[in-house]
Amino acid sequence: MLKLTNIPSILVVTRFLIAPCLLLDALDHQTSSWFIIGYVIAVISDILMGLLLEIGG
Image 1 (tube, rainbow, N blue to C red):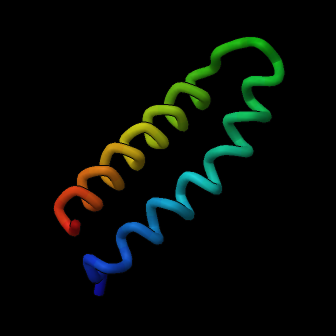
Image 2: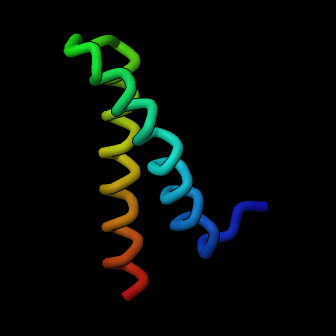
């Protein structure tokens, strides 16, 4: 079962996994749909992390 205390760790791991993929996709100087999807996921995880930190104190 997913505990509230595990969510920040999951978000950090998600960003660590997405970052190299975004970098490799950006090296060809063309914006693909995979880049946009990965970027949106990274932004949403960052927003969620900020909300969790605000709520958790």
